[in-house]
Length: 185
Image 1: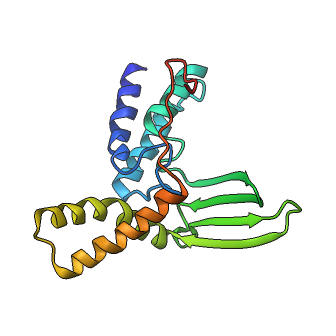
Image 2: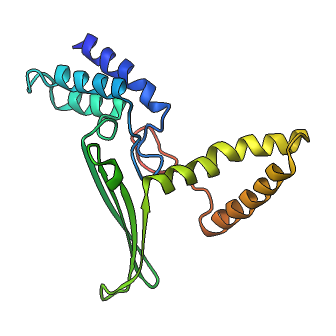
């Protein structure tokens, strides 16, 4: 059992560098063939026989490896948030075999359930936005600070700074603090 746990953790740790979670963006990472093969083998080992692990150990495996999101065949997530004018419903649709169907859908409904707005984002839009707002932000700001940014890069930094300021005004960064029992402090 210990060997399997180490194997699962080891094979999945590389996935954590790709955004192991819970989800770091509204879509799980699509794995390359070799990584997917490792996940398939890990699942087969972990569940052979099906009762191999007790209640707690199964949960430990799923949490530590991110197996609930990494390399899965399908993932559907629905979340909702009430706000002063109604309800925001967000849905993520992921099917490993149908990559062109990956979607993140945001709906805004009034209190009677009438659809007021709907936006649908495909994987390409999500990946592009994630790249622009995370990876490039640091790289471009470092170049700007070092004084070796091109005029085009400076323009991109300025555009990014405007986007980030808009985000910060709408949703200030929130870092949840927990005590040792997992309760919010």
